[in-house]
Length: 438
Image 1 (spheres, one colour):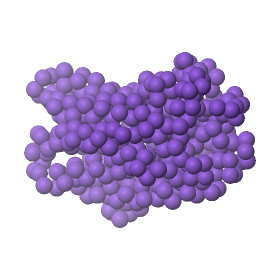
Image 2 (image 1 turned 135 degrees about the vertical axis):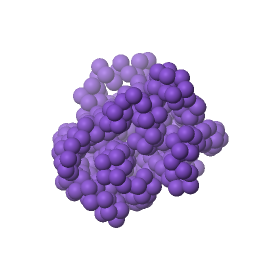
Image 3 (image 1 turned 45 degrees about the vertical axis):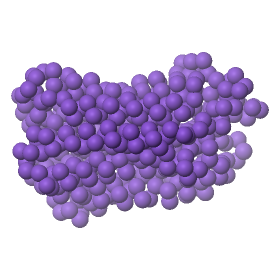
Image 4 (image 1 turned 90 degrees about the vertical axis):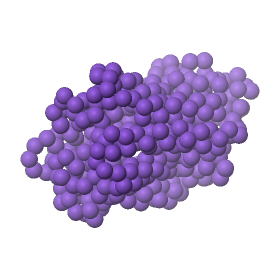
């Protein structure tokens, strides 16, 4: 299990590095470079628009790689998604600016961002199932939390590199070529991830499905037709966590540097500190999920986010690094209380035959509802004088939406909910299939 957990964590960290480095660049430099004829606000919105395209592509990637994972195994998903995302990220670093090739520049940026999202859409499902389907039942939450530590690790890698470049280069050097270096570094990271995953074995549950001929012929159609309600609930349940995370890590960077006049390096350091602390809490919360259940922690996390968002905005507007870090951390603690357990929770909701598709599409549907829209909506709501209380209201509203969705989902931890819980607990059909002999 430690070797499998390391392989899943490393690959997820690398893929999220690729995804996050684009988000940070969108907040800091992509607007003027690729949309120079726009006003500063319109340029930021356009850059965040290309950022959002990656989220729109993620459910499509989940469907594509989910089909591969449910039909041909989890292992091909781990390798294919990592290769696609890595190549697209390196290519972003090579796209000339608008000044060099005109409108072709933002078009290429849009296409490559779409390919990034396509690859990342498949990564989460493969990485989580690698650990969840190998893990012993009583420790499934703990081992499945390792892929969930990948996003904070990837974020720290991406922003750490940009922070170093920002602190050591002049403004002209950073905007002309320095911002491209983290994208080029993605190639080396992708090769490292492929090396770590080269010897990963197929999961026992997929091998059992293959041996008995119980693999789904059309996983996406089966999920949409038979589990559409579960799919919508899981997407809505995860929307708040995405909203809080990207409001903290992407929108706040743009708002603080452009509206509050704060130094880019200071903001990156504040956000990174909060993300590191959030990531360190992930395994602890996952252990609590194994002991007390997945659903209670998800409800607590959503309630925390709903209450904390006004404080998040108020502390951001102080411009004080310590207070801003506290504001970021409060929201991220609420977010991690939910996301630390979803690595076990989502796979347990879906039956094994459609698990790779169902869990991944549900997870990335939450990304569309929360991650794609939040930087755009928040930027529009914050365009005015005074603290952006509209942003706080929007984020609290998303948290309440997720709270309702989690309330409608069942508990899946057998130690808490009894023997009827476990694989496929999200539907009667899935539960009956999970109970059938293999």
